[in-house]
Image (cartoon, rainbow, N blue to C red):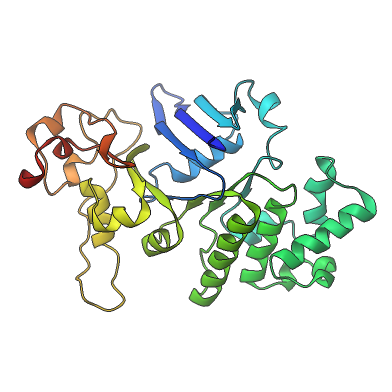
Length: 322
């Protein structure tokens, strides 16, 4: 049974002078325990808004529809009243920019103990012991509990954020670009830590990142978002070797090759404005292989292979003519 099922998730904001911005438009996916799922795409495509919606952390000006089920229970059914009991206990988040996510005037131990006490997992001496366990779990000496965030390096602060997210033993961890602004060695350490935690704790992981090689090496499956929609999802390695949407192919072509074997190809143009009506395929103005029907019809996300879906009309053609 899937630990997380997201069905037809929509997020929109009403504009002051009429109209709407629709940053998440019909997103659906499911996760099994211990599964690592990547969410990629250019900035402004809806990735962070999607995972904030899963946690019920969007501002009051946002409207949300769809279902987010954890072990079959829709945690968004009653708004904040229903999601509050699941937040941090069943689903937790590592925010982008650890320094901004940590309180500078509270010790590391206090901040990790806060969700433990708030959700009644442990109090007093037991809470302090839980803090020590969590610090050691993420590779930080237990005695560092009395230190403040500014006394840690960027990589160690990111580990603190992970320890906080694990405080109540969640079933699902959402990580929003957890390696941003870290050097490559620390990035590797954080990713290895997340890999180990998902395997040892049976925790499912959603990783939002711009680093496509990380997704193919680290994630079991991945989804590509564009203009608020998922345009392709499937096994992470297939997105590189057998992508079925032009946007996915061009994203990987725009990724530098360490060995210099392939030239870097830029994607012309920019993602569309989300406050304007989009007719047909949103990627058509930037696509290198558009079809006539792309201008008037919107392609649905359809099966393009075993466990692989893509929203492109070219997948309806015979293989030899693609």
